[in-house]
Every structure is written in structure tokens, then in C-alpha cells.
Amino acid sequence: MIDKLVEKIKKTQAPIEVGLDPMLSYVPDHVKAKAYEEFGETLEGAAEAIWQFNKAIVDATCDLIPAVKPQIAMYEQFGVPGVAAFKKTVDYCHEKGLLVIGDIKRGDIGSTSGAYATGHLGTVTVGSHTYSGFDEDFVTINPYMGTDSVQPFIDVAIPEKKGMFILTKTSNPSSGEFQDQLVNGRPLYELVAQKVVEWGRQHMGTCGYSYVGAVVGATYPEMGAVLRRLMPQTYILVPGYGAQGAKGSDLVNYFNEDGLGAIVNSSRGIIAAYKQEKYAAFGPQNFADASRQAVIDMQQDIAAALQSR
Amino acid sequence: MIDKLVEKIKKTQAPIEVGLDPMLSYVPDHVKAKAYEEFGETLEGAAEAIWQFNKAIVDATCDLIPAVKPQIAMYEQFGVPGVAAFKKTVDYCHEKGLLVIGDIKRGDIGSTSGAYATGHLGTVTVGSHTYSGFDEDFVTINPYMGTDSVQPFIDVAIPEKKGMFILTKTSNPSSGEFQDQLVNGRPLYELVAQKVVEWGRQHMGTCGYSYVGAVVGATYPEMGAVLRRLMPQTYILVPGYGAQGAKGSDLVNYFNEDGLGAIVNSSRGIIAAYKQEKYAAFGPQNFADASRQAVIDMQQDIAAALQSR
Image (cartoon, rainbow over all chains, first blue to last red; front, side):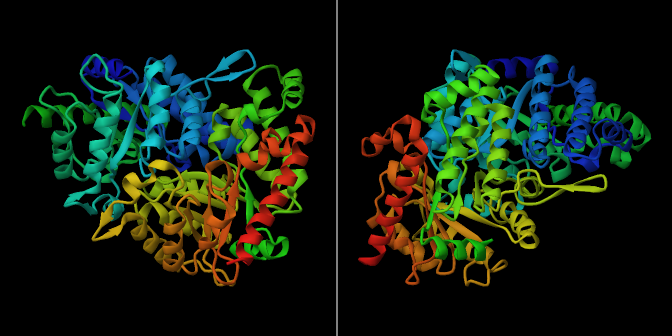
């Protein structure tokens, strides 16, 4: 999948993923009304509303982008019907040719990480049949529990040719509380980066990059530059663009000289674009067209920043 | 819920939670056969098998214990039907008067942690109605992303009178890779412990303990002793007993002088007890009775260890 991701990034010229993180407040009233008419003001109704919202945005953007990143928390808030909408979204994105990065930030002791890996990247055997639980192409992983919590994901990913991104330096304001602490004079996130490189050697793509990537927030561009150098063959998933405050010029540090090596996420900035003044002319009825325009603008912003470096 | 947990621990004299972490390989053949007969060898069939397995164990042990801790990974491996079995298990445990600790180890940037908190501890509003997604009483949380990833759980937990346990020093072999790294001469897990205490001050029970607890593995009893002293008003969830290798005598360090302050988890050792030589006489047909005996033995092991200290 890392080879496929790189190939799709080259083809679309868009190192961009759309964060399908629907809050009900982002979903235009007419979409909600239709869903509630069919399923009532229930968890099923909410799940239908976010699924229809996702579907329209995927339809409007799938030719422009290589991948989406649904954040499973946004679905779990609606209980089992929400999780079913997550699965429906994953399957639909695959139908439309998109790669799916499941933003699940899981991680546990060995056998438990194995179960997460099975559910999200692998297959499970029931009697004489085999099934995929959620079937993402990549997942995000929390490394706090160490190698034996990460290895089961790699073990499942190798035969499936799937991948993962390990939280290294996250985009949120408090990320430094533990991640920036100095260990033998170097911040903890560098120690994590070193492990990401080690873990990644087990599962390299033919494109020169590893199937084991890292998450490094766009909100810390100087740290991004250091981490880029420390992990030359690691793909970096970069959250924090747009609504979290980072601009195109903050992103150049995350890319290699080849123009590859990073994929930038935007969630709210794209899926709720119609709520911004800049895209207000589209109106709520054309929310998906506003999202399409926001993807085009983001692509140009990043391309311009990369060209001018 | 921390008051209710302490009250139930006093009443049962069992500072024990049963880890409802069903692998299909733990489920006796006759339970699987019946489930597959009804639903086929499908994800729905697997979900039915683990639900029936859980139900029998809950029925056989609910008068002896205060709480259960279902590990959501074991359900996610079966996709959406598995997650539905998780929810069914949570609801059934509530019916039987048990507290439910959702072992979900979530944690993300602020708004996303907010969505997890909503889904697992809080309520979500759909139109003019309000629903609980999963409705656990406590959850486990990964602190790697810092305060702003934890605070949303506290914000939801305060009005709901619910709680959480923060991963501090985990039971797995690699836990030291990052958690034991020295920061200003002290291991990172102590820094996390300090934060757990700070976070916990916002949400204290009348019993003297905080609604914000810590996870400290039974497999590191010396670190457990240090952490017990550092967090006197923090309830400690202790995994690692039984199948992971820790014994009753390893657990005394986790309890306060009042005999409270810790709740010990056992998963495989209880739910798959019938597979152990010690309980083999029960046979697969009576697997739930074997689990009941394993709970009684565990309770006595811990009580004896606490008395002899």
C-alpha cells in the first residue's frame, strides 16, 4: 500500500488526505432532515446523516486525492450505528479507488494489539471462513507501550501489504508534556522516531519508503525538519493543516527533496469548507462542491510552497 | 462511580475485575456450534458465540465481583457485529449490577478525545433526543498526547459521575522502552503519575479516592510500590495477574493500608479457566462454573496476601 500511496500521490500531484471526521454540526440541515425522516432522531438517523455527508464529499473529491483518513472517534460517538457508518465509509472509499487510513490510534499489550491489527488490517477466521472486520489500508498507532505493542500490527501488515503511521510528535498544544521531555539530552519524540525507523526496516516498499510511517504535526515545523532528517525513508502523515493553524509554508520541512515523503491531512478545513467565509457562496446545498474547491486550493497552496523552497 | 466501586469492593471483599476478553479459541465448541447454527460461520455467528460465552460467565460470577473490564479490541476483531456484542455485554453487565470498565485505551487531540468521551462515557444529542453510545462506567486512556487529550474525558466524566484509568506503567515486557526513560533523573511513568494526581484533583469521590485512576501492571511490583506512594488517593487498576505471570504476593504493593486503592484484573485466567489443568475437571460444558471457581481462588489468593503483609 505504501507503493500504491506513492503512485497515487504522483498521479494526483496532491500529497493530501481528506479527514472524514464528521461532527453532526458540520452536516447541512437538509442532509440531516432527510436522514431523520427515514430513521428518526436516533443514533441510526445520525449515522445515516454522517454517511450521506461523507458520500457526497467522497464523490466530489475522489478524483483529486489519493487517500482519506476517517477518524473513528467521530463514529464511535454514535455507538454501534456510528461504527457501522465508519465501515460503510471505508468500503465506499475503496469502491471509489481511494486508500483509507483508519485514524484509530490503537495500541495495547501484544495479544490485544494483535486483535486490533486483525480487526483493522487483517482477517479473522470463523469456522472455515475468513472475514475482514474493518479493512483499512493503513492505521495510526500509539507507541506508549513499546515494541511489543507495535510488532503485532507489523506482523499482520506484512502479508497484507498494508501499513501504519506511529504517533511521534502530535499536533496538539499539550503534545510536548511527555513527547518533548529530554531523555539523555534528546526529546522523547526523537527516541520514538528512532524506533519507527527500526520497526520500518522490516516492511519496506519498492518505492524506497517503509510501510511503517510516522505522525508528525504540522504545528511544529522545526521539529518536523529534524524528524524528516532522522527518518529519511519514513512517510510522514502531517495533521494540523488548516483549522489547527498550519499553512503551506509550514509543510515544506516534512517533504524530501524528491517532493515525496509526506501526506498532509485536512479535516474540518475541507469537509466543513462551506461554513467558511471564503466558500460561503457555495451555500449549504452545495457543501460538497465547497469541499472540492477547498481541496484544489490546498493542493495549490502546498505545490506553491514546495516550488518556492 | 468511584464511590460505587469502593462500596462494591467492600461488599464483595473482592478487589477483582473479570476481563471479558473473549478469543474464539476460548469459546467451547458447543457454544460456537449453536451460534453458527443460528447465524452461520459469519462475523455475526462469531459475535453471537462470544456474547453467549460472556453471558454465561457473567451469570456465574456477578455475585462475587464488583466489576468487569471488557477489552474492546477482542470485539473489534469481528468488525461491526463484534462491536455490537461489546455493547450488548456492557448493557447486560449493568443489568446484573456490575460496573463496567471499558478497556479502550483511547486518546487523541482535544476535539477527538471529546468524541471518544461522548461515545464511551457521555451522551450525544441527535435532534431533540439524547443517547448513550456505549455507556461504560470507566474507560482506560493513553496519556502520550498530554493534558489536552485527557481533559475532555474528565469534562464529560464530572457531570456523569464516571471515571477513567490512565496508562501509567503497563504490564507488557516492552513497557519500559519509553515509560522507563529517565526525565530529569526520574522515569517517565513517574511524571505521568504526577499528572494523574493533578488531573484527579478535579474529580474526587466522597470515598477519598479520585475518579481518575491509573493503570500499573502487576508485573512490576517494585514500581508499583513507588507509584502507590506517589498517588495515595488514586485507584490503581492492576493488569497482569494470572496468565501474565503475577501472583497474589506481587499485588500487596498496590494496596493502601485500608486494604483499598487497587482493583486487580484477570482475563484469560478466569474466562478460560476450564482450559487449565487445575480446573479441567469442570469440562468445557461447565466452563462458567470453572470461571466461578477461578474467581473464588483469586479472591482468596489476594486476601491471604493482604492479610500476611
